[in-house]
Amino acid sequence: MIVRFTLPVAMASAVALFAAAAAPAQNALAQDAPARPGVDAPELAALGPHPVGVADIEFVQPSQADPLQGQDRPAIIDRHLALKIWYPAATPGKGTTYRSALPGENGKDVSFSVAGIASPSARAAQGRFPLVILAHGYSNTPVVLSWLGENLASKGYVVVAPDFRDPPITIRTAAAAAGPLARRPLDIAFVAAEAQRRARAGLGPFATADADRTVLIGYSMGGYGVLTAAGAPLDPGLAGATRNVLAPYVATGPKAGELKVAGLKAVVAISPPGTLRGTNLWANPGVAAIRAPTLFIVGSQDHVVGYNPGVRTLFEQEAHAPRYLLTFREAAHSIALIGAPAEMRGSFWDIDWFEDAVWRKDRLMAIETHFITAFLDRYVKDDAAKAAYIDGLTPNSDDGIWTGAPPGRYAGYSPGPPAATLWKGFQPNKASGMSFEFKPAE
Image (cartoon, rainbow, N blue to C red; front, side, top):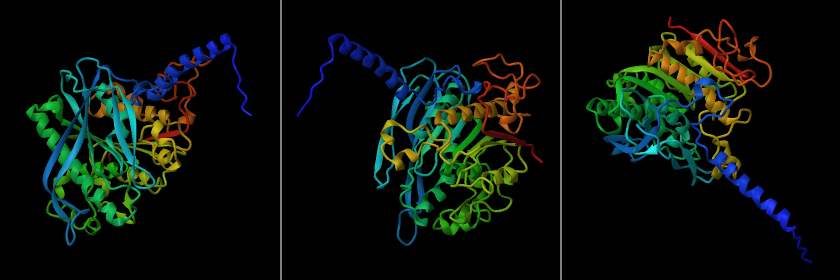
């Protein structure tokens, strides 16, 4: 028996009106660009004064050894790298929708879309802006870091994000890992040098970039790449682990110095590994060879690269550079990816690429953006006012106090010392579950 229920006309109309009103709000929430922080974000997470443009181009590096191809020895091929470039634009645009994909559980790509604030091919703003190389993790794509690329572009940075085309993470073999192990530092060094060359020549979307103020930012495998390109010498054991592709570039090799990026002013390493499959990534003195100011960001429950030992160890070892360590207590490894797009929420495998078990993803991105902005503005743009956001902070965020804050749900930002020990730029009750540490160069 089929039973049909008929709503009164007035009630049916009300339901229809409610659904029509609710749908746009839900769609707007689902489609909002990750680069645009929420109302509970710390102060420096806010977008900057510039509209954002985006361009897609390709760099080609001829005659490169590929450890994933060839029988007796790595094949020599032309290395094609697609780049996504976010830059300050002259006028506002309509934004865009990015299309990308990550490997699914069966090894096949799962496609997804992400809203962006950037406008394709927008006219660039006038000025000279620091150059940022933004390196993604294993089997990721630049789109999953759009939250950071777009946000930094709005604040006056030209951000270049290569697509490294790693093998699917479902191929969990040493042979597959040889690809990103070999190519990540080589690709980053090449992209940085070529972007700097085009910036000095005033070419295309690089015309407004300042090659003498270069920044390296990397997540996970990209973190390994940027720390290497910042000066950490590669361990000789990586020669065998990469079918000898890295043999000329390890610490004892004739080309060891060619990986170091010139004009480097700062490094941000998010969840970087120090070892991989039991192989040390760097030879002595390791990250202690780096001289550029460095911001490390990690979750205390990162079981992919480790915390202590792990990223905290790298922070301690980088003795000859001023360095900072932002720790999200109880967070795991996926702290740098956008929140899971709608298309990636249908299975545990897909959503686990993106979401953290404890922390809201929009909260993670906002806090990271806040600290990365303060760090880069201070060390790359010489903005002394930003020092108060990262220097002299109470190490444990839970210990911060702002006794003079207005009562209730006050949305204002802590002024920092001497009025408050609550971290500067955070709203009351919004700085918890973290630690922030600093060590000067020795």
